[in-house]
Amino acid sequence: MKPSRRTILRTALGAAAAPALGGRGEAQESPRVSVERLRQVAETPVLRVEAIDRPVEIASLDLLRRGREYLVRARSKDGAEGYSVANSMHMVHTYPIFLNRVAPFFKGKDARQLEPLLWELYRHDDNYKYQGLALWVCTAAAEFAVLDLLGKVSGRSVADLLGGLKRTEIDVYRASGTRGNTPEQEVADLKKIVAESGARALKFRLGGRMSRNADFPPDRTVRLIPMVREAFGPGMTLYADSNSSYGVPEAIRIGRIMEEYNYAFYEEPCRFDHLEETKAVADALRIPIAWGEQEFSEEGFLWMIANRGVEIVQPDLHYHGGFIRSMRVARMAHEAGLLCTPHMSGSGLGYLDATYFAACIPNPVPFTEYKGSAAVPVSSETSPLKVTDGRVKIPTGPGFGITIDPTYLRETIPVKTTGG
Image 1 (cartoon, rainbow, N blue to C red):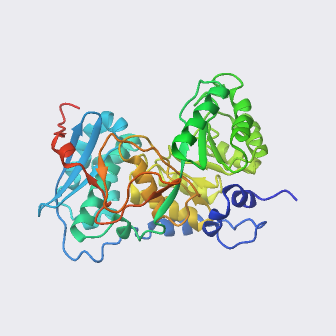
Image 2: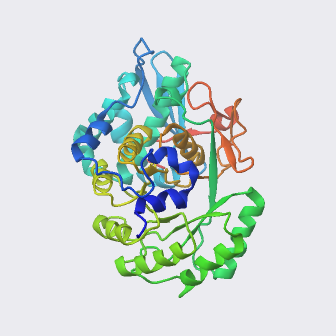
Image 3: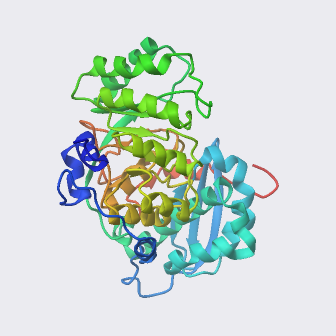
C-alpha cells in the first residue's frame, strides 16, 4: 500500500513533529476541515491584553534609520517606548506608505486594540489596494513596535501577550542562498556552514528561481540532490527550495529525486501564486511540500489548508503583516493537522523574530531557519541570542526581551516623507 502523505510527513520530519500532528494512526489521512471551521479558528482573538487595565494611547510611531537599517519607535502618551526593526531591504522602497498611511492611522489609538485595529488599518483610506509587500512590511514593523510597547508597559513578554511560550529553545537550520555555482562548490559551501555552526539541518537552492524549468547552471539540481545527501549522511535533515522554478511535471520529477534521498521538505516547487499547480505536485508526491512566503492573503492560506494543497505553511512575519496575522495561519494549519514554519526574510532582526514565532505556535517543524546578523546590535539578559549546539534560547522579559544598544539608537535619524 502506498504510504499516505501524512505518514511521509511524520517520517520525514521525525518524532518532533508527532505531537503537532496529533494522535491519529500512522496510515490514516486526517479528515478535511471545513472552511467555516478554519475561519472560526482564525478569528478567535490572538492577543491577550486582559491584564492591561488602562488604555495605552499611542502618541507616535516614528520611523528611524541608521545606515541601511530602519527601526520603528512606538511611543505612548505617557512616554513609554517600544521598538522594532523593520524588514529594511523592502522598507527602503515602501517607507512612504509607512509614513503616510500606517503611522498616522495608529496615532491616538489604544494599543490594547491592536488586533482589531489591523483590520481597520487594512480598510482605512483604501489601504487594501496596496496589499502585498508595500502594505504588510510597513504594518509588520508597526505591529512589532506596538507589541513591544504593550509588553514594556505591562511588564509582560510579547509571548505572554500571544498566548505564552510553548518552548524555551528552538532547534535551527542553516541555509545557503546560492545559485549558479557547481554542485561541488555548493557542497563545499554547505560543509563550511556546518563547520561554523554545528547545524544539524540544512537547506539549499534548486532550479533557477521563477525560471520556467530552466536550471542554473544546467543539470545542477539533479546532481546536487544526491551529492548533498552523500556528503552529510542519513543523520542530517535536508530541505531544498526551488523558489517557484518549475511547472508541474518538472516539479514532480525533481520531487521524486528528493524522495529517493529522504529529504524532509520541498519548498515552493511551482509558481507561488499557482495554488492549484502546487496542490497537484503535493498530491503526486510523498515528500512534504512547504509553501507560503509570498502569500499576503489570509484567504490564500485558508484555501491551501482547506484543500490540503501543502503539508507545511510558511508565512513570512514581515511579508504577511506581523505576528498576529501569521499566528492565525499557524492556528488554521494546526486545526487541519498541518505544520507551520516561518519564512525567514533576511534583514534586521528577522532571525530572532522567526525563532520567537516558532516558540509560540503549537505546530512548528523540528528546525527553524536562522540567519544571525550583527547589523543591529542587541543584547538580552535571558539569552545569548546565538546558536549553541544547534539551538537558540528564546529571550524572556518585558516586550521581546531584548535591548537595542542605546548608542546605536542615538545615532539613528528620523525618516521624513521627502527622503529615504
